[in-house]
Image 1 (cartoon, rainbow, N blue to C red):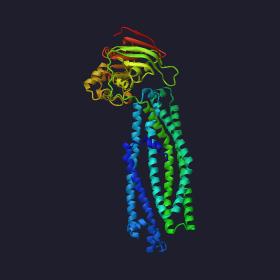
Image 2 (cartoon, rainbow, N blue to C red):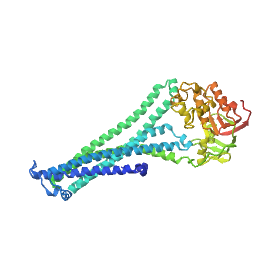
Image 3 (cartoon, rainbow, N blue to C red):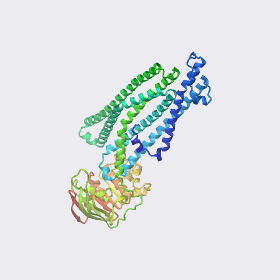
Image 4 (cartoon, one colour):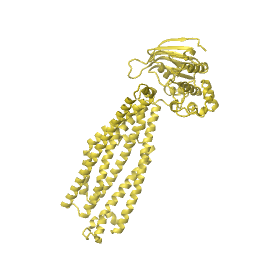
Length: 576
């Protein structure tokens, strides 16, 4: 099998002891089975000499292995059968150990791989991460990594079978080298003949990966647009699209099963013919005595289903291989764009101003820069408003000053300290972000607030809620322990946004970014949030991204953007 990819995901430090134990168990199973098969010849001799239905005609001292004679084991039915049964019991125990070790090995690698992929995505540079299709990432983390587990399982099973076949082959060589080599060569040719079938299995595996992505994309988009689907009456079309995705998935699965079945049937038929031909040749050309031919025939009758299983393992491995390629490619892409570690760096102190000097930001696939040669300053403690048409670069500006991205040209600095490398990531600890689409996690209001400050007291939580004009929480029957539902669906839009603001304030940030935070709210909620934000003037710096609403009225510094450029900047006396 092609073993390079598993070696790339295999880490000796984490999985080495499991691999060692698994290898020893494989060898133990092969050894006990091959020794048991080798005992067939001396048992036939013993039965022949004892005259138990064999007529004494099968006795042949040369068929007794030298190792058995050297151990002083009596060549009689009783002792040999005791050894045979003991080997069977030992083999069963070792097989159980091999099964458990194999499962632990598979789970260890898959869980480690999934955690590595998730960690790589979380630590990936924002621009690279934002350009990815998140439905594809969800498909990979949930489905494709499990297919990697299937690939590992098949690789382990295939290696175990290969080791067992090796043991059977060695036992056959000990009895008759010429017959064993002939049958072994035939088995190798048979496996090589299935190369095209394994190649087809890989192609079907790629189709399977695409079908999985299509299904996840349909489900992901559909669940996020249920209101739109129902309002436009498109339920039937959405169901039809999902059915088509599953139809492609089932077609790929069915084609693989059909080819696997044909492969197994071919091995059984051709293998049986090869076995019969070898036994016939051995008898006609007198290559070995009957007492040797019968055990060898039994060995290769045992080897034939093993050979079929090995082919199936190999074929299934090829089928799952694209999932491994996709997983490793995602990890490589995300890790290559990994942000610098900020563990050893302190956030830059902020007492004067955030300054942008000659900043330009470009995104792949866009001919013009999103921001072009922008220079501005946001004084500490002020409320700044960024306005402009959609696509003018407002949210990109927020990502820059919030430390999510770095400019392609120019600099972003906090009190003269440039936000670069790990310091940019460290600065994010002093920034709180409230976006247009409220992101609340399934749990209670307390759980969501604790995201900003784990273990904060109820007094601190209520203080932040009051500062965010979210006093409604005090009137709820369960207060802080009120369940918000998935995405905060049990709360109104205004309630969600005020809890988000409270969560942001609980972090005691130096910079608060409100990105279209009230654009979807009614005038009362808009005014309530604006009133709460106005009280923060002088305590922290606020950057508001917005087209309209009450938040615009409280700004004392306005930056107007157009087509990625700073069109104008103005100071004004804000309305209280």
